[in-house]
Amino acid sequence: MQARSGRTPPPSAAAERRRADLALVAAFLRGEPAAERQLIEQLLPHIKGACRTLMRSGADVDDALQVSLMRVLEGLAGYRGDAGLDRWARRVTINACLRLIAQRRRYQQPIEDGADVERVPSPRSSERLVDAIPRRVSDYLDRLSEEQRQVIVLRHVYEYSVREIAELLGARVDTVKSRLLYGRRNLRRLVRRDVAIGAGSSIEADRQEEAP
Image (tube, rainbow, N blue to C red; front, side):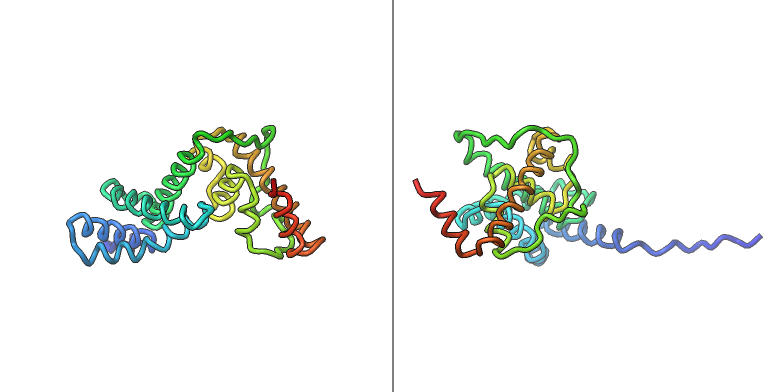
């Protein structure tokens, strides 16, 4: 019988990345300035991206960025490497943004999204979300209700599952499915209207709809 090799197989890329992430966090927690700079340079683009995607106005983005960066840095002591550092920071940022949105809407009337549905197609469904996009995607997202916008972004941009979105929002799974369904319908309606009458004309129509 051939003797079994005593060599340990090389670590996977994921294991190497986890080890590097944990080492960087440990150096940051020890107060090493170089680690702090590296950490912020690595995570800031992910934090900014999530804030810009979830928040509507520039002022809201600035507020969310400050709060999120603070939450990420404060939470590093509890980071255990279960997820990649970038993904972990993005999730912390999303939670911070959602809390800010909830605080600002606390005294507003909630928007009804319609009845619950049992099934929502995945983002890879044969029915595409949009066929043509005359305007920027962010312009269409800004026309949705806050609830629909949040679930569309979390599902299609960050690829969270419906159950994960429900946990993030503190909502029922069926409620998330409903918001996804109606959000997709509204996005398709907005895009098709732009295709039919032209983006410039639809912008003017939007202004007339919003006028008192």
